[in-house]
Image (tube, rainbow, N blue to C red; front, top):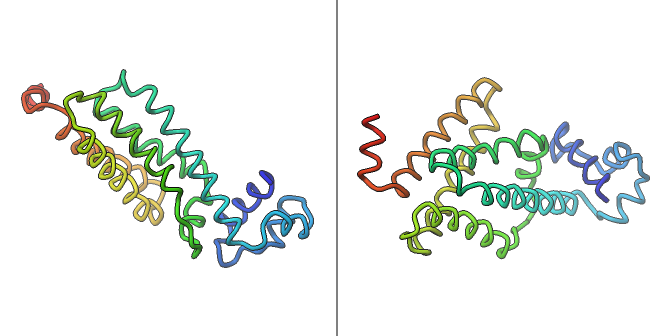
Length: 192
């Protein structure tokens, strides 16, 4: 099944959702069309499986970030948040095709909550006085900032993508710094 999903991702990245065919996916996987249909009755089921796989992979990446956050500054954490997303997109060329596919899919609410809790915990680690409610809200806002990069990133040239990433890092860092550092700390940082 992993080979089928890898082949499907390759076909989706090259052809897009509409042009991708089950026959091409089978050929790319070196499998019979019957084998593909045994696991996936249609393209929609393949896209749902890829979305689940991508969600699980992203959760794993956030787990590793969570583990290293204690030793990072707020700015470094913001930069890492953006880098996690960019690296994932670059390593998964089918990401946008899968994301844009006209398939009904709702990520598991428990997984969504775990991600937000993980990020909220990072924020609380940086500012222990932060209430859970506020940290969770900040996690939601931070994720929306990162997700908003997708539309611009998808359409940008390679050079422009690098510039967009810099802008998003600055935007997220500014937001997080404003929320996670004291006014005195911000003034001292600016004075340097």
